[in-house]
Image (tube, rainbow over all chains, first blue to last red; front, side):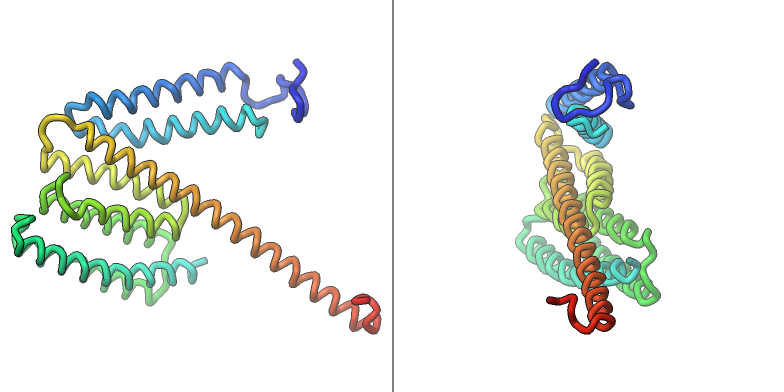
Length: 73
Length: 197
């Protein structure tokens, strides 16, 4: 599969496949939805303990997707 | 690196004395005016504990700063602020914003890793405060406050990381220039000043 402008090598040589990154972005979106739901519907403060996991997870997965799209790896 | 840490922690000790003095004055004023109902014994005990901890940090720093010390001092600060918050009305405490002093000062000094550490600790400590002092009813505002803190932490950490990278690049340039200058001087000494022309 040929790469777009600025790319090098083939898609097969990239360490992450587009499907993996795609699932990562979907997981990030799900985490953002969960952040909204926890904030909106929380009945106990204990649910706020999920924030570190959700915030850092969503950011990490979105960064992974962005870097993959920019062909950093 | 260790000397840098030591200087940074020493400056934190000095700032901590200042913040403790201001907080003590504020707590006494708010207690006398009836805005908070924190017992005098708690105010005095907290002040004494912070003073003792700060003295201990000062003694430790005379021997140098271990890499873990920054996390201990920051963790102690967050913990003590949370106790202050718990004793002065929980989520409604006028001392809530003191968390941000710890966050910003440490994030700017130490970068993203420390920013995430502070946000993580704050998240856990603030949930504990909310459990001890239940808000009652809708918790959305408290969730938004925690998320806002995460936002400030990550942004401050990102900016600090950028500044640190620029400082490293600048240092590399300075070293390169110094190296080139010494080579030029060396060549001039050997070739009789023809290189500079």
